[in-house]
Amino acid sequence: MPQQTIEDIVLQNDTRGISALRPHLPKNFIEESARQILDRPGKVLITTGFYIAYAGAPETDGPPGAVAIGDALIKLGYEVAYVTDKWSLEVMKSVAGDTEVIEFPVTTHHESAQFANEVTALHRPYVMISIERAGLVGDGTYRNWKGEDISKYNAKIDHLFDQHPHSVGIGDGGNEIGMGNLKDVIPGLPKLPTNPCVTTTTKLVIASASNWGGYGLVAQLGLMTGKKLLPSVEQGYEWVKQCVAAGAVEGMSGERKDWVDARDPEADSVCLRDLHALVAGH
Image (cartoon, rainbow, N blue to C red):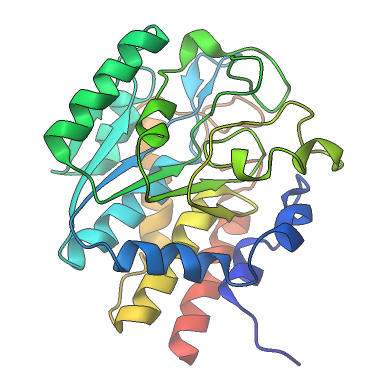
């Protein structure tokens, strides 16, 4: 029986059909993403924050995965800052520790492009990473998994990626930054949006939950550097609880509880448990 891969682990228990994109990506898409990061040591900007409009709050998927990546990169000697907007600022700060969180304004495309220029000039990122961040769709709006227009709840952080030659997008639904890489494939697949994100990244990671994609990337970075970088299962759950305490909700129900994408804490812990087992086996 073939050995389970990190890609297998982050795509298990797929309830939203994202695995249908796997044949359209490199077999080792997580390894390719990790390699791009390791080839460019320096400053990294990580963006996240997905607002659940019908709940009036950001969701629990995204920030834990973002901070897992950020903590791992800091251990590897990188400088890290997070980028989000006012809707997810407090949730991101709740898990970011002492790491800087940049607030990207919710404004026009012109002013957003100007702000992106300023951030790029000031921080000079070597790599940009997006995890569970709504991206522009073809009609110029931002839309949730139901296809509803949520543009007024999204800063146009896409402009940071439009200007950068080295980037990674992580998503689980087809409407996140990076899914523009497969914008011609996504509309024809069951459960995925007919109007997907068009914002591209140089590398794309898909996962059953975006946090899982972040954890998979961290596991791969650890294998490639020989360092212990994966957060514990307990730490992963603690980040989710901290997000909820700061106002986040579970994305599918909109309820303020310590679940992620309709998975209770036990179901959500499966990915980190399996990644730890795989890393231990190496």
